[in-house]
Image (tube, rainbow, N blue to C red; front, side):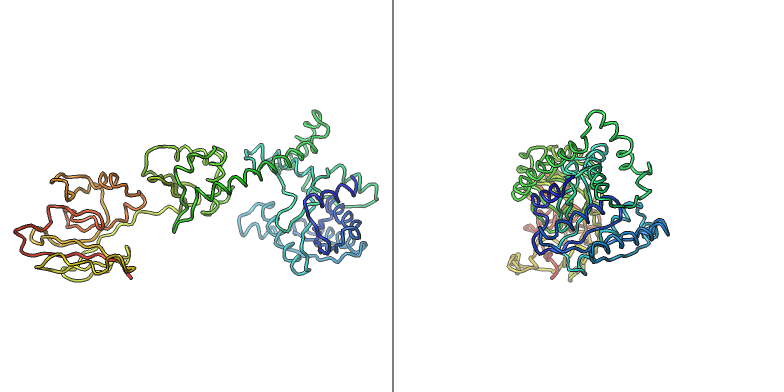
Length: 465
């Protein structure tokens, strides 16, 4: 390894600009010691200043405290400002039900960002190497990951930079030995309890018998896949702009546009929609994504599929909806006749009045926010009490204009192309036995006024203000 390799990596990815203050995460291990020394050597050339930080995770008692003092001594010899912190990570993990690795990662990144802010740094440098990159690719490949996962560890993410990402672990050890630099070893790195360690200890030596430079090869492959992934992301943004929109309560996918996409873009767009709806990538497996794509490819509408994190995917006419699954809202409210009945659960207000004249004009007529629907009935044909409710299984009625033919409410709603997600919330005016009116859609002709009508009942349904 040469300093030039690190300098070239910094330049290739635009990691550092002149005048930057860089916070170096210094664990005391070989990678972090190499990182601090290499950046210190490049300070005059890059025109930067350094600050080092070490977090005692309190996993190993006195040994952890010794590592903190060792890190402080390294920073001191280089005259680099140093910040040390300590967090009881085992307790943190117990309180949150996290694994030791996941908890330590959360705490470490939070600590580094805090120190970065306090020190006035613009970059946080981590010591991930090409060997880490190779192990990450293998680990994700074994678990089953897509192109994004196989892209591995990004050289730059927000204010995080990884100047050693093109350098292998063996090259780092050679550099440290040549410079006579000491470091500490974390005993947990030798434990086979972690998948990454088993890959490093057991799998990598086997692969090296086929390719002695397997770490370099896999790291280069990850870089290639990262470029391919970024190209796909550009296409995804273009596709998302024309296919995916954010509705009031859900994500809306244009069905025709979605079906024209390449399968790879369909997967990505679906994952992007899930992420926007609140599902993390780890929440939804590749198998579930494939099941969802098969569900979306079916021609039948009015069906829904449950997904993790309480989400639901629905096929509708000309579109797909993705949002939080909602339970059917059951409603049954007796109406005051005559009078006004407020129904907060459906956001409606119902006014009933008796009339002997013609159907009055709709006073709201859509010009106001509380737009209303109204219908006129022959009250003598109605068997009170009168209710406003949501639909029930088995509901039938005789839609006006169908010459007295009876029809299932379910079939009527399908024929009218009412989205499945709206059917259970449709307000219905009914008696205990009969459906009088699908509000806003169709009345039952059996209850309409005729030549012999003596008492008219006007029902006016408005959206509550």
